[in-house]
Length: 171
Image (tube, rainbow, N blue to C red; front, side):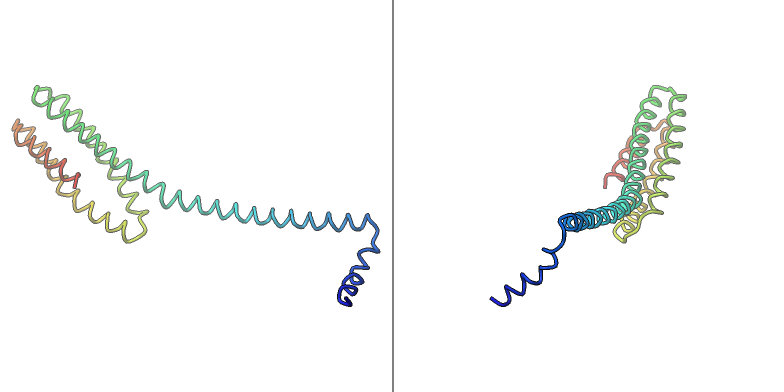
């Protein structure tokens, strides 16, 4: 019972305060709580901003570069089909226009691929880069063979080279 009495006596100073002081103390405690929550929110917001920037620069941009690369390769594939049918019809102007579009697309996907290579960070990505580059060189050579077969009007060989080129990218 003594402890309880001492506890009550220990609060005597608080009971002796005027109500205005008690309200002021309560307001100060609430203000400190609000300031504490605000500071925590600001710190969390800054951390989120850094995390988003990291995600954007390290994950989103590389994926966008890969998308551009694949989109260009798919457009080259469509151009090759167009070239094949135009060559069979004897429309060599269309063949040359499509070849020029493919050349521009090749430059675009090469730029995107190089941008992706410069951003790649971990060993898994670097392994994928090596694997991809091992596929691209033979595919590029097949495309040149395809164009040579088209120029010679050897459509059977051109069709086979196109099929081999397409299969090289599907591995």
